[in-house]
Amino acid sequence: MLNRKVPILALFLLFGCASNDLDKTDGWTAQRLYQEARSELSVGNYETAVSTYQKLSSRFPFGKFAQQGSLDVAYAHWKNGDSGLALASLDRYNKLYPNQKGSDYALYLRGLINFNENQTLFSSITGEDMAERDAEAGRVAFASFKKLVEIYPGSSYEKDALQRMRFLRNVLAENEAHVARYYMRRKAYIASLNRCKVILNQYQGTQAVEEALAVMVSIYQQLGLVGLSNDSLEVLKLNFPASPYLAHQYDPYERGGLPKKIRRKTNTTWNEFNFVKSLKNLIPEGLIED
Image (cartoon, rainbow, N blue to C red):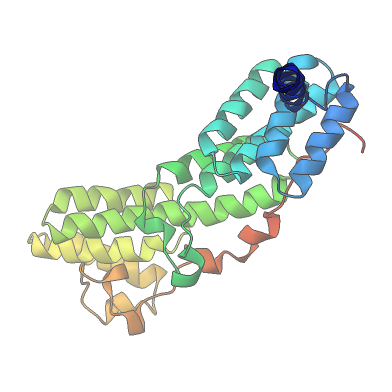
């Protein structure tokens, strides 16, 4: 009696395993796959969304749904915390659809990914200054936004890209000032002066110019180059007549070269950049009318 039940049980288990292997999306159209992936993306199920977009791409590699999916999957990877895969997806999109509709968003998303590369979990609470971190991601982000506004004027992403470029320009200038202080502390005066000259040449109009001039006044004085020190001082007075650097000696061991109570306020901390979070759930649109 027992022997007769074994084959039946084995058949039941085999059927159960086969059922688990069934893919509910088998036979779905490109549109249905896209809508399912988009639905998962909109509620934050990024891994499931990526998996569904991959099925869409493999089964229907051509057409508007595949093209939009290529952008969406890059966004999904980014929101899922994998910037590397997101950037790789954007590279793939650019190869498959060069200069087509959606290319402005691809540039914009590339900028966003690098823009947020150095943000940390507590940066909005601590007021972490981006200028004191590695600036390479900021340079890449700036280049992406700059390319976007130059190639696609009037893009719906242009206004935000320009705003981020202004912020990043301040960040990059402040980064140069931060490095100048670092070299000055180590008495690498020529290296420090070179950083100041970068600020004066490339970042005119930023707040870092004021500090760069103050550094130059101090270093030239320490090197005994009185004429150059006085020249730098005159430029500082002319452009920043109310500068605290005129009344206080520059100290490279202090952020900004000044005690906190008199230090100028910078525009490079995350908690001052209020509109960062306004695009938290941005999903690409435009290629397909929902």
